[in-house]
Length: 85
Image 1 (tube, rainbow, N blue to C red):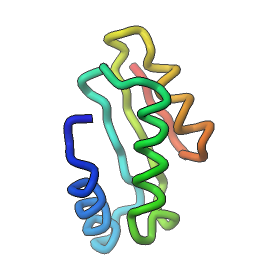
Image 2 (image 1 turned 60 degrees about the vertical axis):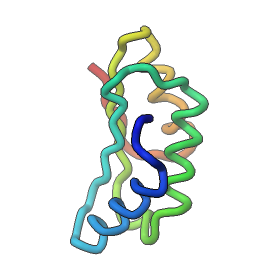
Image 3 (image 1 turned 90 degrees about the vertical axis):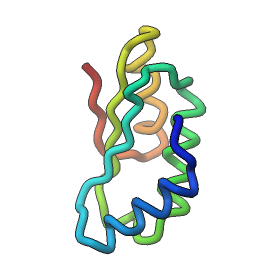
């Protein structure tokens, strides 16, 4: 993840307040590690105010052949929607 986690928390808080119903956290670079990605999603869900009022979604590229593993980790931790090419 190239974005600062605190910045993401601030932005996601703002868009939820503005009425967002789904938050998508993409790994468009395709170089995430499954457990680290799961931990990131969990951290965002736990730190973003009103995070339980939205559907959390992620989109991962398969550059290293691990997209499904990366997606499985947050899903296993309670994230609701998965998307891989």
